[in-house]
Image 1 (cartoon, rainbow, N blue to C red):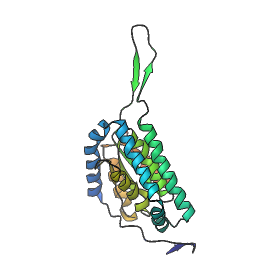
Image 2 (tube, rainbow, N blue to C red; image 1 turned 120 degrees about the vertical axis):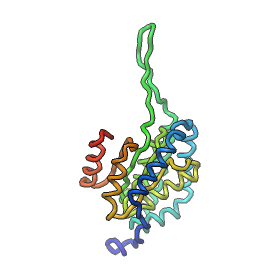
Image 3 (cartoon, rainbow, N blue to C red; image 1 turned 180 degrees about the horizontal axis):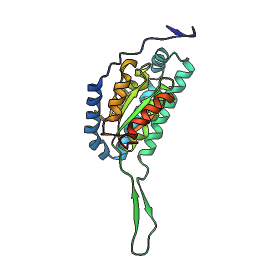
Image 4 (cartoon, rainbow, N blue to C red; image 1 turned 60 degrees about the vertical axis):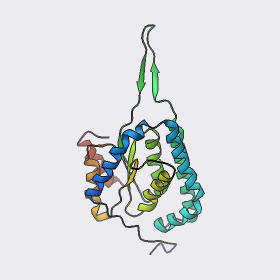
Amino acid sequence: MSVAGLYPMIPAADADARAADVRAAVDAAQAAFPGWAATGAAERRTVLLGAAHLLEERAEALAGILRQETAGSLAWAEFNIRLAAGQLRQGAAMATRPVAELLGGGADRAGSVGREQAGVVVSFVPWNGSMVYCARAVAVTLAVGNTVLIRPSADAPVTCGIIIADVLAEAGLPPGVVNVVANDHADAPAAVEALIADPRVRRVTFTGPIGAGRVVGRLPAQRSGR
């Protein structure tokens, strides 16, 4: 198979998650959340920097995988990997930013505003930005102490999710903090609804087509999620 006769493609990896798999992934992310939220900022930063280093170290091999799965050019694949590593480094920098802000007060009082982790975050990643969109979706989310479920495009589950999850795990990310829920097009509606309808999912990020975005936006609104 090829696109415009220019670049060879291989079929997407088997992506067959069902509703039960979705629930298991949410279970894992929810169970991992308290421990990851309590992890120090320096440790979260170290994990993200380590994952960025692994992407760059394996750039040549990963570019080949990316080209096969998405039919992109070599230049595009290399750019995608560099930018993905940059996104992880940007997230690492966010990990050590202050999480509280002091407010003005009188002589006998003071106030502050703090930020707390939300919990489980679902990130929908499109095929045409694959690795960089995946890195962008998880970097800051992990940096501040949330856990993530990546829902990659059915057309490119390896480069839209699995690779980033693998390098994060190898860099020291604890089990359950990042999970990949991949499914084929036929199972997508049920899997997406199961993901977003779960009350333990506290935030949803989405990059993709308008029609799918409307569906994704409608479901959390029905239960006051974001």
